[in-house]
Length: 225
Image (cartoon, rainbow, N blue to C red; front, side, top):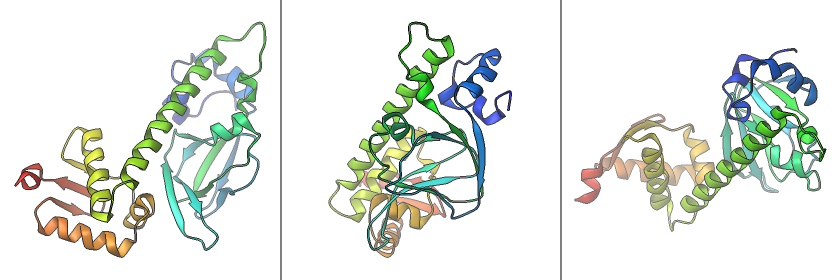
């Protein structure tokens, strides 16, 4: 691989990289591609992570699973997103989540330790990747804090309204699509799916929102009545 796959060129992690540096980056990060089928475990809880992944195609789920197999959905990864970068940087702590292929997927594995090495002279592309890596980690920290805000609500109804309100604000409109299926949304908010479906039905009957699959429309006027 001598040049970036197209999805890498639009990935925030490689923002600002000049085309002539692509070959050096792929070589320097020891890039190698691997494919997975739906439901494959890409990373297992408790294993040592030596490389960061960049999703080229498909979709991945980052989950925490307890002893009995109950899942807490942390995030959904789409093409161009990176994952496991924190553990690849530290390497002193085993990963505390699992990464599962939601559908057939292709991942580009990158050894990012090369950009963390302390040297007198550091290439310009390494400086840019370090900046992008820091921004990426900060953004994920904000998203995790947002998830904690939703989960800190007292009941399923409040968790749903908190999440949907945040999505509306994020999209800048009262009509939007969410990235989760019903079960995934329940796992993300740490609630029972049946209880969540009941609350969604009540919110719809009260005129607060309408929905079809993962498409939602919020009614601000009904909430104020």
